Length: 95
Image (cartoon, rainbow, N blue to C red; front, side):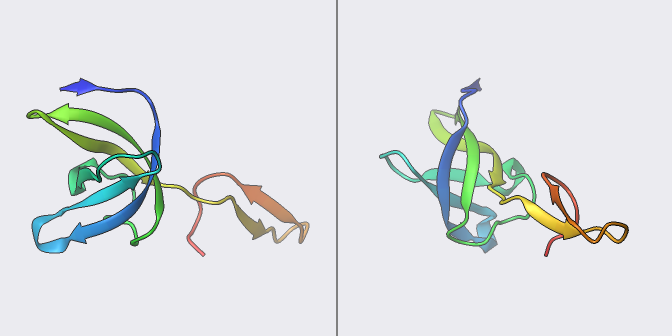
C-alpha cells in the first residue's frame, strides 16, 4: 500500500450498510472516495453529510480513504466548581 500523509477534507455522502462501506465526496474536485468500516475512527458510519478528515491510500490499484474521522466542533461544558464554561478540545461525552 502506498499511503499519502496529506490530510484531506470531504463530506460523508453514502453508506451501504449491508456491505459495510461507503463514500466520501472530497472538497476538492474528483470522484467520490471509497471508505470501508475498518478504516473509520469513531462512529461507524458517521451521519450522512458529516464533514470528515481522512487520508488516502492506493489499495489493489484503487484509491480509498483511511483514518476517516468526523470533524468535531469544540465542546463546552460547565464545571461544578466555578460554574464557568471550560473549553474541551477533545474527549468527553457527546452532547
